[in-house]
Image (tube, rainbow, N blue to C red):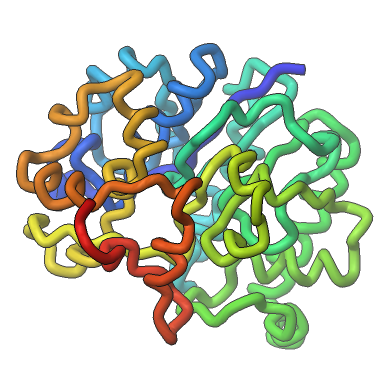
Amino acid sequence: MTTTAVYHWWDDSSLIDKVWRNHHSPLITSIATLRACNPDIEILVLYSGNRKLNEFEPYSSLLNFRVVPISFYMEKYREYVGWDYLSRLFDLRRNAHHINTDTLMYCDVDVFWFQDPLPHCANPKKFCFDGGNSGFFYYQPESEEYERFIEVFESYTLSALHSKDMYQLIQKCRPYESDHYLYDEMVLAYMRKYNPSLLQHIDLTEHCRPMHIHKYGQELKNIRMLHAHGMFMANPFTKIKYLQLNCRGLLCLLFSELYERICQVLDPKDIFSKEELAYVLPKQYSLLENPQKLLATRKADGFYYAHLCGRSR
């Protein structure tokens, strides 16, 4: 069984000039941690934006990943807030011919790897995810089980966009509040209730989110990755004001395990500014040995503010 890791990514080059300087949507640092853990896995970036392909160099060569320009399948629904995120599963289906392996493994750009993601724990003939969050999943695009899954997923999605009654039914299953009109996790939650046989649940060690860290105990050392969903990481040096609290790429400086992965394949000084390095590195600690330092940054809103991790080491 072979696997391709796929990212679905877009950005605005007028806001951030270099791909690797985008710590809000940290494509390069996520890929770097994956490449450090698995030097052979195929990595594909489905990109929609105004950048030229040579703007991904030198890292597309150094980290050995391909970039394929795409258009959004859900473009015609752009009047709905969140349409570009909703397009993800359909864009993966439409571009499956770019994948040279039998399994597709999707990763959000705020997924950072501690260990090799392979082998998969669940049977990828079905759509495999943690049952709640769509930031990481895998499946075999050619399997009958996946084809049935995506058929039902599309029918519910389009019905919800065209029928208020259907939308209200799916909305009752939404896992969290969002400004997105319809998002894939709403549809997946509806399917989990009414079509559970089409989904395969994966182990928490395959998809670790901060909200679950307290559940691991001694098993925390076995997590394969951290998905920084629900986390903030401040960057007072970015010129873009609304990003000053949301630069999760800097987590690769904060957590010693991730910093080690970055250093295996890149020079951090090429990715992060001197100011960013000086700001975060003195706070660095081991997430696996001191998870309570992260858990202590959780505020009443339920989010983790990782930069508030206490005193410098």
